[in-house]
Length: 234
Ligand code: DC
Image 1 (cartoon, helix red, strand yellow):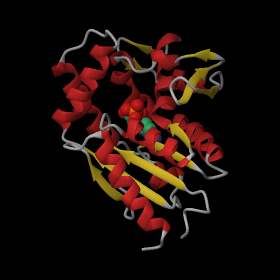
Image 2 (tube, protein in one colour; image 1 turned 90 degrees about the horizontal axis):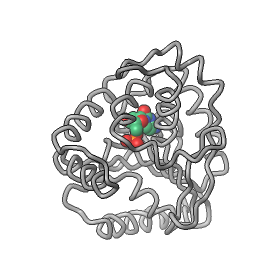
Image 3 (tube, protein in one colour; image 1 turned 180 degrees about the vertical axis):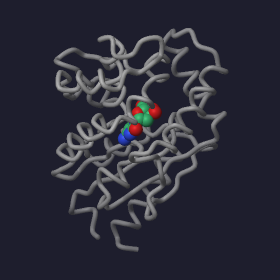
């Protein structure tokens, strides 16, 4: 494969809160590719379900979520200030509302609903049709683009991941404890890996990146070396 002259699909799957989006966004910017955060799409559906009565006291009413699905139009618009696309639901900017602990606590349940996955996977396949994308998620290399030319699987120590998510949320002024974040990270890992449909799984041909002890710059260095080898067919 000559990835230099041909735009490819780069699938970045892995556990929650291990910096997939930061990494995927950085490599997309470096290559001039489009970055697509599929977790944001599952979060947007969860937020809409929370705001429209399909989740009450943390209980997800699956039938109600399915009924709401037809009323949810998800779009992305590039935001130059962030260097990435913001997510909109029915024309409303929801980027700032989808990363709360309330959404995180319900998103695994919502993303296990087959009709939700069917709708979002079809959208993701359409967005990647012209290649030249870096897509991060859980099932990109296994289900959405099993033919992706490069598949990465990211992981990191759960305690390190919880600390990173905690730092991110408290920096935004959210009132959370490290314990509840660590519980959420572990519960989501379990739920994402054990769901019946499209569970989180490392594709057989994925390359693992454990970034527990790596800076963002070191991850970029690792990636560029790998990409250079792949591009030159080594
Ligand atoms: O990447 P994230 O933590 O923002 O994702 C939020 C949730 O969405 C995660 O707990 C699992 C789900 N998800 C999924 O099931 N499939 C994807 N491709 C992306 C995310």
